Image (cartoon, rainbow, N blue to C red; front, top):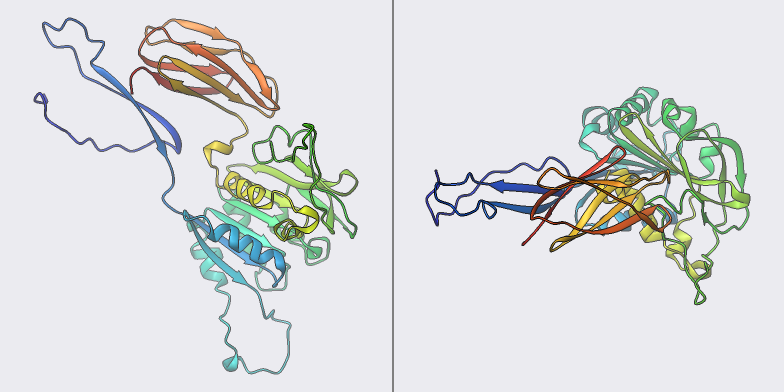
Length: 367
């Protein structure tokens, strides 16, 4: 029993990131005229406190700074960045004790503390004996049990030193053909990419409402997609960005090291920052970038129902009211991959929404 007018603090653990709808209620007391004001609904947005990212650059290059600047600009990201400056095969006669370099802590990062990272990025990394297969096997297993790996590929990905030719190749969504395309091309969003949250809406618009042009990139690694979703294409329609889910984890493969050209404004540039930001956050499993999602935005007694789907096979949304009644609400596609409807609820309280395998809960009524 809580005394009238007393403030009570309740400990609460959010079940997941993103929007959480929570209902508080007290039982009716004898003599109450109505119990309709005995409940309150609140919405809490759950976010991770810190996201730990490991960035491994195989060699210094302009794109390495682009990745670093992007990740360092996000205050929620705790970045650990290593650039390999002196590979084992380099013999220049300089004594080790005179080098102002630190040894790459491979065992600590890839065996002992690998599960501490939310995302691992290999940026133009080549196999030089720095990471033995046992470490790369551990990275592969890290992905399968829920980790995420992003590979930004340069020329090395098409060579015998490619990460694809390591145990990590088992979780790669595409394989290299060993061909490097050295020609100018404009990256493009595929039909699937128009529906995918990582790339949807990125294409520039002209004054007439059509799609404009991005700056060109100058190199691409030829890939053959094996699984996952090809959301961007490059020279002659070749796969440029491939995303995939592997058991509990996620993998992304960017078949070029030229994204930095957009950052420098080459031929007008492009949405490099937004693309890489979305890509990183999709890898980190942010709820706002899930391919299949259902949610509702309430305003008073009206809710805006939103269903996102890359599959395109979307039916009506089944709405269950606080009294247990059900209503079927049809959706309209407002843009590729996004379907919406507005619906006014008859009662104050929690409404449960279902469409296919997607479910959501929303509260209507006074804030």
